[in-house]
Amino acid sequence: GAVVSQHPSWVICKSGTSVKIECRSLDFQATTMFWYRQFPKQSLMLMATSNEGSKATYEQGVEKDKFLINHASLTLSTLTVTSAHPEDSSFYICSARDLASVYNEQFFGPGTRLTVL
Amino acid sequence: AQSVSQHNHHVILSEAASLELGCNYSYGGTVNLFWYVQYPGQHLQLLLKYFSGDPLVKGIKGFEAEFIKSKFSFNLRKPSVQWSDTAEYFCAVNAEGRRDDKIIFGKGTRLHILP
Image (cartoon, rainbow over all chains, first blue to last red; front, side, top):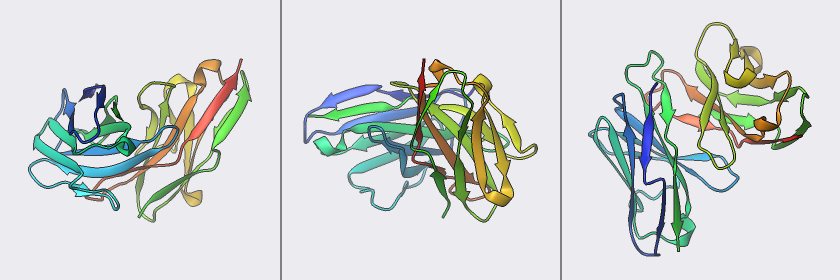
């Protein structure tokens, strides 16, 4: 089946530093990937849609300069949290849409837990 | 824009009880519907999905859901729950045919099964 991986699975960083999270589709190609954020005991909130070879589309209220998204290939999208602060601590989840799927199914990664000290 | 509403925020049941979690969506067009489960400390897993065809969808672990188009509903059911079903359940909708193809999640229902 379609597998999406994320790296790292967890990261702790100091306030003011930048953190990069990778999302990879391991056995399928994905022109579109999605980035979500999940606060403790809350639902997933869509942050942005990442399109291969073009700029990401951000949801309202999400700072594009704060959360930089790059989708350089059909199997890799990265999310960089720039100048991280404690309020950025969260669980970040990506999903990838399988081009070959009849219904363009999306598959979710295992998530990355970010803790900013 | 589409949205998803889950009626129950927290449900507590005893083992062997029957379960029904409500989910309603708002969108005028054709939709794809999903139920995801998140076990404590684990990542999101797909329970079942509806794209087309039979509105009664069977998923993993004995779960099923019924799509009722006239009611804009996609309720999740299980006839007899187990302690291991303790988890958070998310209903989600994706507007079929839209270029952006986003999946929008409901706020989730936390299910607690008493042994």
